[in-house]
Image 1 (cartoon, rainbow, N blue to C red):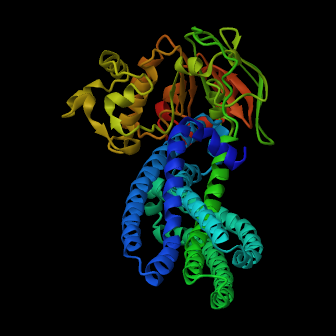
Image 2: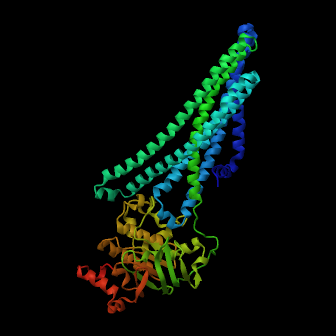
Length: 579
């Protein structure tokens, strides 16, 4: 969709306010055209004719004109800002909603800072264009048109001298518009790079400091800032050269008009008032043209921002149009020859799994073997390249995405909490907080005693990403968040791998309680979590190479036994050895 059509689609709900703003703008700019014409009456009807009545009338007219102009300008800006702010608010909301629904692969492949810059930087640029620059452009265009009409009325022959210059101005505008659009794209791209660089550094500030890498991060930020600086200077340079060249053309035209018009006054073909009024209009026309130049520059940047926003909105989102809602599941899961590829790289090859409702299986294997990808396929974060995944005998593609995911609880390795209270985090996604269910979930997660020991209890605020809590406490809150809906399927994606032994004991107790009566898929390294699974699958390079119980796999003497033995050789405790 082209930028103009895109903006029009969002402006339609505000067309009445835009119409009112346009009417007041026309009145205001029309009144702005009148003062130079009054110069003619001042010279011809007052100074030369010595008419005091006309002097009084002109003075009153000036007061009335500028009084009405002030009122109409206020109303014009108020209604245009009301409409413009609404348009940009709707665009920003649509952009955020679209980003939240994009496929995970697309999100993970994008820089978070770049996505954020579309919502903040590009939307803010568009906001300034719609609410301010567009108004100024229309006001000055109408003012210029009105003044041009008056100089034709005053003397069409002199006007022809001005018309000769206009084609050159038009060519310059066309040429500069393309340059300014390219420059606008570069400015926004480099601004997004600044945002992304800063966001990455702040989100990993502990890593930065632990490696004493502040100076290197500052250098990255400086490089990004220098790119934005250079792009801005190039845009300003194009804009400045354009404004200067056009002004030279207009001043040259003014000089020619004054020379020809002066001779016409001398020979009686033109009155002194008409010449002063005509040259006054030419002089006054310089400002609208200069303002149009500036507005064109900003609008080209706005077009670049609009194109960047449209590029995001054109990215496909998760397809939830064919799924059936409100299908209650029991928890039987089957993988039938499932393969998965990301871009051209095949991650999983012919995966087959069967787990009965209430059963517990574990998937282990070296880092990068595809364990977490299997977990991500069940809630349809990704779609298999081939094969089928069935729940209770029904292909998961037939479930509505939201309905499916509400019946699956996930406890990830990195537990990220939202800024808010503990109760809010446990009940996240539930809508209205039901404290009875929150407390019940906290009991299952074995975190209720700790929460109630806090001064504010469940109303205690946690910091961004939950940094005010320990790793074990965050993980148990994540367990409570996963079980509060009473899901039939529970996915534990290396839920204890980042914890120390003491924290793992508390979390493992909570996990054992949470898994009761639920189909459990355990992606784990630690034996404390997987050794009691009904069946353990060993994954390497995207393929299952072993399957069985813990004892059966040890007896096989394969990869599972090798990894198990390796950890023992390093003195790792049997109950908590890493696989």
